Length: 207
Ligand SMILES: Nc1ncnc2c1ncn2[C@@H]1O[C@H](COP(=O)(O)OS(=O)(=O)O)[C@@H](OP(=O)(O)O)[C@H]1O
Ligand SMILES: Nc1ncnc2c1ncn2[C@@H]1O[C@H](COP(=O)(O)OP(=O)(O)O)[C@@H](O)[C@H]1O
Image (cartoon, rainbow, N blue to C red; front, side, top):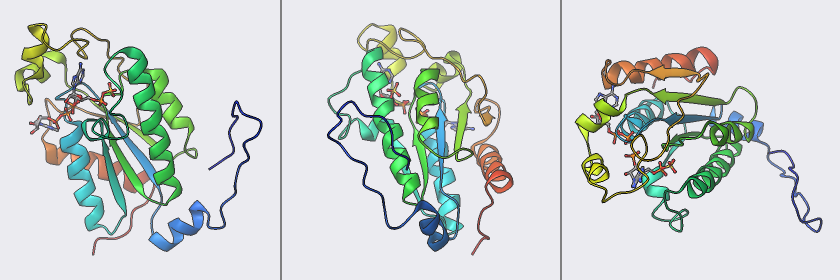
């Protein structure tokens, strides 16, 4: 990880004796962030989980950062205002960057509705190691699925600031991959992610 500007001039950057490259060599694969973004119900958690299983079977060290789960701990003080979402993504991006330094493939599954927040998370990891994966399903489809009943509650006004209904979602301009989750099966989407990683990162052979 590179030293970054901090507000406090009494802080110092402690270098590490084992580098990311050392850890990658030990692990036998490249480290990366797979940043799934999309509306609630677009398929982020389903796909992060399914891709993780595939990578695990390929002997990759992985971890899923799920928005709902982070909000039970690290981000339990945050709600769904724009300011809180910015902070939520900032923290998730920092955690993802730490995982990359540890040599792992981290799969983040957060709505992450703002392009600027996703761009900031990208800047925290080495070039070529951040894969923005857009789970592209429109509001109508996600509302039809209504996996958790949240769209119904958002329409009735019980749940406020709901992404795609009463809070904005900025679709990615230039993601590394677009998954059409309303058209393609989970298996097809997983294959798309694995093929991209194989081509751009290289993956260890199946065992
Ligand atoms: N108002 C509102 N808007 C959107 N989502 C809501 C809201 N309230 C609760 N939830 C639940 O929180 C999950 C999204 O959290 P995230 O941390 O991914 O959101 S964000 O990235 O900060 O926008 C989201 O999970 P997913 O459905 O997996 O996306 C919901 O379960
Ligand atoms: N191609 C696909 N990719 C992901 N999910 C899909 C796909 N096709 C149908 N689904 C369904 O859509 C829903 C997505 O829910 P979920 O993964 O919880 O979304 P999110 O994490 O984005 O809120 C699941 O019920 C899943 O079975």
